[in-house]
Image (cartoon, rainbow, N blue to C red; front, side, top):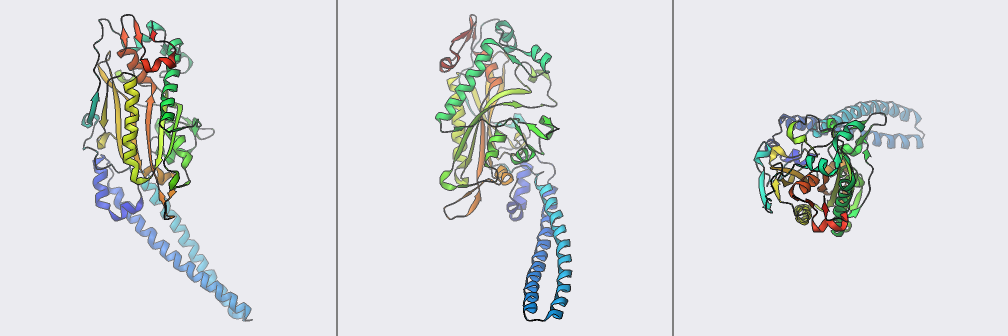
Length: 423
């Protein structure tokens, strides 16, 4: 949620930034300022009335002490009128505060100045490309056919048990999944992240805190009886650890990593993008999350990008890093880097990670704050990244490392798989 003071003091800059993010309802900024002005007027009137109430209450007390009961009774009648007026103003204030919040939650985060202009993924900026795209042998297969050949995962069995988008991993396919999770977690822990195992369902407050609600409500699986949501990413429960908390500045940054299954409805997905492991309703991911001092968040963002790079290099996968344009960014993000790995058999790039700085957008919703050296309470910055999401990593490993004799396992992963080859 954008800080209201930024909108009050820089309305034109806010409108320009929202337009860069291709936000269509720019008029909401003016509506918000009108509501905010009304709210402040009502609040000022309420404070004046309450001041009169307090002064009158003190006067009534003095009159009773002096034995002037009749005068005190007259003042009490006057106080009753003020109380009634105060109640009406309080009711108006509550409505205006709710109206203001209703508008604020519709506004996406403001993009960082380095975010490129653009509307679609084609406008994203390629920051870096690393690694040679391998030349595969004749007859090389896409990962869904490799899976059938070596019995690694079964999409049809998942349909039988649940539905499309819920694969069953088998044999060395299951072991590869488990190995990757351990590999990613170990590297995060070595980088100073504290591991947590969070709940895989969250309440509405948690979904609101990280920006999934109300923006992505239709993309989340909802357990209606208990009003819980299955998490789309471990970012949601992990970041919410710091909801309504005030952290001492000396204890920053807070660094956490978590493995979790992720659940996404992926409504509207279709075509080649959903083939095999390309797009699933349930998948596994290791997440890294940081709560940091505002002065250091962009330095931290670069460190998190480097962390993901190291993982991809150790997995011997060709990758590229994109700085997302305004129109392709997430609702809550101020700046996002996407990582894509090249799928040689499919001859296309597959997104495997997003690393984002949310600045104060999430922490303002969460009330995740820190106390600085001057004892002032301020909003922290929050960041998160996929390090990494498994399905497309598995797809790329199978496709890029296939040979005529089987699938070669990268050397860095062998201690985790306990085998160096599939096939």
